[in-house]
Image (cartoon, rainbow over all chains, first blue to last red; front, side, top):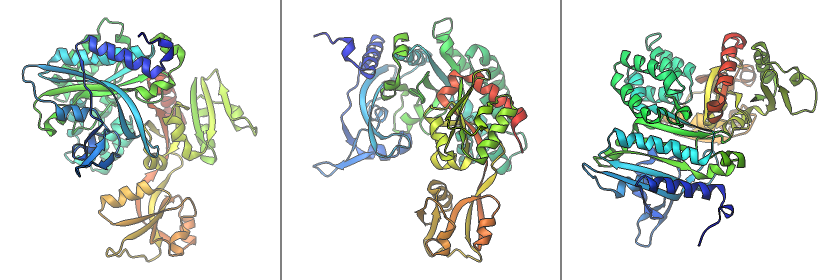
Length: 315
Length: 208
């Protein structure tokens, strides 16, 4: 039976397109059980997008959770594959407290996880797939890319105090440069100590425009190798149609307990929030006793309800 | 065209003055009319007045590209927005106030009346102090006078209302002022226009 395109809503159409894209790149489907033991999520609460998890007691007395996240499940249920790469994609509903709203909501996500002995090529491929995913949703999109290792090095240089660092990182995520200065002043740091970090956060835009200055600033601050790693990964877009849609922006941050290295977020014109989020999460793998490296992302399909027909046609 | 949400009231009018001085004027905004939305196509701006506590929602949800909100609202609701500039107006502080001569008895749960539950909870959690939050929507000062609470957490501007009711500030939590905020997605697609406006406000319109 052939399903006619006109009977599908925007979310369904995009969901199927993305599945086609990922399977075309050798990703196989991961089907998640609706329920997992609550312990998995309670030990990794910081990784979850929202605090709330729907729980219930199973017939055998175990406390179970209705899936709030897919990545944690994939990491928990996977095994290390030394010398190999494992590619999985998923199309699942998760149950979360959405933003400032009261109560739980069912949210549909399509995403992928690439784990194992990752080299540059796999990281570059995932970045390319993130951009391609956005292109399949709408014509006018931006994929913003950051490197947490660089951002962390600049904040580490400011203060060894974890609480101060956390506050500075939160300000970085808000492009709140005056807030960074205030925190540094109130923490008794030397006047102007925050200037390199503020310069880094001010360097956003296309890789061609800002990468030379980032390389120089990173080298001056002892992390030239990480800037080189970022620049190398971005070459996957050089000379392609996607290049004009890529921006470097160090305000794209993530929880340092889980994410490391390259992180990214996707935006579509006309949709107010981030529609795609992902990055390297080797740190999460270590937390869960895994040795493999990992990178992945999720596309939040519920937000696609707001896509205009024109935007869809441009996709 | 940049959609700009301004807070209704005296602060909003002052802030509009800063936008106008920075080259983004729209005189119709100050006329006494029933209009809700005001355009200046030449300047590339569209203003609308909203309740001050709603500005962050309009911006977070993308109905406005940018807006002006108090730091108190940003700390309480934590909207997913960029905070681009401290405009240096609407200055006040978030403070703990109590009846004159109040001494905190750490043996007892501290009853805190406030409109800003999250700010109060974060402040006392960081100190490990056990508190009972009493969420009120207004006339917070009356709570300790009537014995409803031990202290209040509220915005203090001059302190006159507190003094007249025999209350005093016992601790400042955080200084507050108006902030220029932007929708994260809108910023990506209207970067140049938002940067131009932010720079102009930073240079000319911002007051101390």
